[in-house]
Image (cartoon, rainbow, N blue to C red; front, top):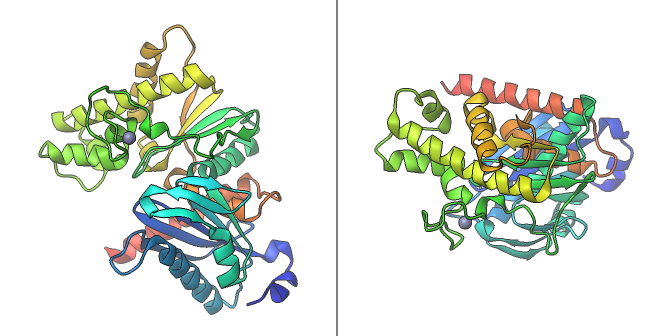
Amino acid sequence: MTRGSASRVAKAEEIALAIDIGGTTIKAAALDRSGGVYGEVTVPTHDRLRGPLDGVRLVLRELQRQLAEAGRDAHRVGIASPGLVDTPAGTVAYAANLGWRDLALTDVIAAEFDLPATLLHDARAGAVAERAVLLGAGETADSLVFVPIGTGVSAAILDGGRFVAGGSGGAGEFGHIVVVPGGEPCPCGLAGCVEIYASAASILRRYRERGGNAEGTEQIVARLATDTRAAEVWTDAIDALARGLAAVSALLDPAMIVIGGGLGQAGDALLDPLRARARTLLPWKPFPPLRASVTGARAGLVGAGVAAWRDDAPDATFVRTAVTNLARSAAARGRQAS
Ligand SMILES: [Zn+2]
């Protein structure tokens, strides 16, 4: 596979390899510009025998193998990574959970796979996908805060149509705002952070610590009316998020707040009490509209696909179609497994 062969393909026929590096898994998919899915693979981020960078190499090779079977080539790569990300340089300056420091990720991919790569911060990648959908629906989306909630909690801040990256590229560490002084210890070294109460992983952990037994947060949400342990950890999560979002709203005055990640899919069970609690914490100011994301747990992956096409960004149709196709193939895999 060479750039020579890639250049002969019309852009409409190109395939992007999208990679979302999460705290638990690395998700990857081969997507065309219409949101068609040509291959998919998910591997654990951390493996006994290899590090996360080898995990990225592994998913790229596997997608190339799946594409080759279909008689197709990959043409570009988009990556969503946590940590301090420098998009123009294509480097991850620091990612604690991945053990990365000053990693020139796009250079590594260009050198080893001969593919142009674009790197985005994972929350910003998710916000890119979410924003494309909003713009496609004719809504203004120049001022919003996108909060993906999964293994961790972070935020992408969009103001005046531009992302706020901060002085060191580290803006958006919403999960480590302290909302319960003297609260539960957080791996970041502080105590009482938003994330230690409100990430999906934390909600599940706190439910189990109280003797509850659940595979995922959906089960906890389903038991809110009948299980006091479920209600307790859910209320704590809502309260931590509300305190954090009230601070964000007071400081940034976003026109909209969008909750993403798997937890955003809880819908009204999350949004109604969260809205009510946040309003009591910020009584002197209208709280901005609060919504669940359209892209859900696949925001980062689809946003990485959008990033792969760089400034020539695909539209809402790409995002919606890719999300639908990825959900459909996940459901098909679930049926096969059961
Ligand atoms: Zn923390």
